[in-house]
Image 1: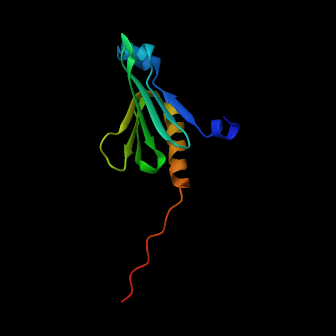
Image 2: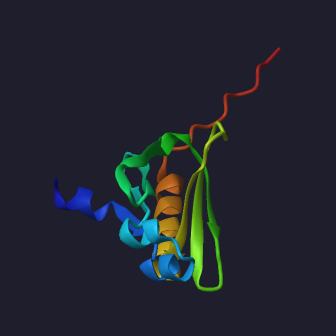
Image 3: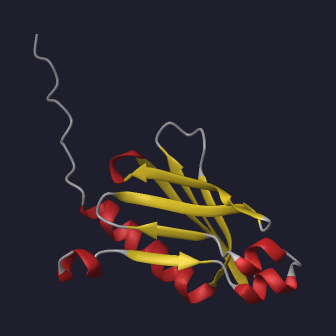
Amino acid sequence: MSDSAADDSIEARSSRWWALWSLNFTRLLFPARIRADRLGISTNVVDFWLTPWRRIDEHLPMSHIAEVAHKRGFFWDTISVESSGGLNPLVVTGLPKSSAAQFVKHVRERINRAPVTPPPPPLRR
């Protein structure tokens, strides 16, 4: 992987302190991860600590992202990425405030850099 491709990706993972505070043993051992790169956004969430091979890996291409929601909490934040279809958002909770803010800023910049196609001209009669 080239240096420019490595610089263009960002990852955030749930806090182990949040997992300890919320008594979530699974997140303590296996923090939830959300990653954005030039292709899209991916999540990796383990369901249960006793069966770590049962995990949910989801991917959403950049072209299908409708909204990146950043829900700010008192100590930890939540990121929700909604698709243009609107069915199954990618959600990761318990993120440290700084990494959640950097992640959202990075993704929004990437979305805004996408080329915008102008609307077709009106039909003349």
